[in-house]
Image (cartoon, rainbow, N blue to C red):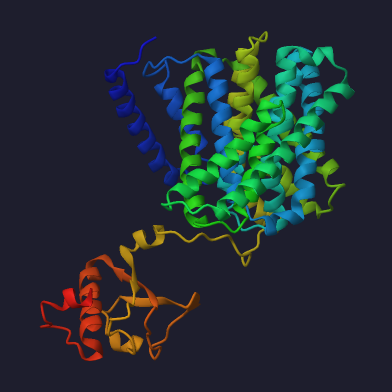
Length: 506
């Protein structure tokens, strides 16, 4: 198959239009309290062969691209997770990702076999595929609900770690290797892959942090690329030795994200944007892979039945058993049980048996797809209400904040950085004597490596750096005034200044 420049033009046209629409759809979905995956999945279905006509049925390619996208999403989750706030809930999160997943797989498998009539292989695959929660869904929805840190920390840790054991289990079952091992050998393989993945992730994280602190890169834009590559290096190294790449990439990113590295804010913003792009591409691709004509009333009924078993039986029981590791109130456990958000992960895992051509794998994929959509519609919008009813919501709970330029963009403002050179007559001028245009203000002064919040009587000195916020429409006037004072001192006139002031100020 060849790929020429005309096909590239078409790809860029369609791809950019779809991505732009998906980005704009985030605002609508966030207002409705829904993870954006629903919009993206619907876009993929509409673009597919049943509506617009774009054909896509390559399960192996979907499997490979899905794993790559999940690695990027997990890396972003690790980079943006605050370890100090999460570590108190790690025990419960890890228990949910291991013990809880085991309980959930067993309950769903038994229910799917005896209640839905699925053969044992397909029933166990259904349990393994649907048990993990989705990191993208959890990070996008849970972080906007004012919850105690012990709840959000447990849910985020669970979603970061539970992909690893389920990927191993689904792969072994789909390849037929699970039949060659006993349950203890199978458990040993999973434990080994998890432990090795965590160790490799720790090595990549701490080793990468050591390198980044000593590397003087020539441009700030290179730092986020380097940090993300270090996290993905952990994924690749773990996969190369048959360990869990997902555990490695999450742990490596968690270490890097909580280390004092240069340009941390830029790195987090970059990873967040890349994760959004990965989510958009992933969900649209999975929507393309679905054939709506295969969805029958029987498929819908089986998806509803499996969803009921998962939500009403498997999830509460797995949370209850996992809580033996770390106690919580029944209200908090009930919310954690309800907040087990499914998303792209179950659908991506369903592509593994599809690519391995397991018998009835297409039925499994359709059931999982419908189950995820129904679960997301019912769970996502109700989380704030459930938190309020259970009285686990905290109005005064502080939320994470990130410093970025977006708030300035929303109020049409700019931030100006001014360095006071040895020749500048800004030295000795008080902040109030600058007489900046109304609406512009000096927000911060950096002096000898220390930050200083200025007042009107604060006196400027040589070597100071000022951060000034000014509306777009006043930027030129603000800059002009600063140049005038720099050239003429505190007595510089507001109007009629020498036209050479700009040159002298330089």
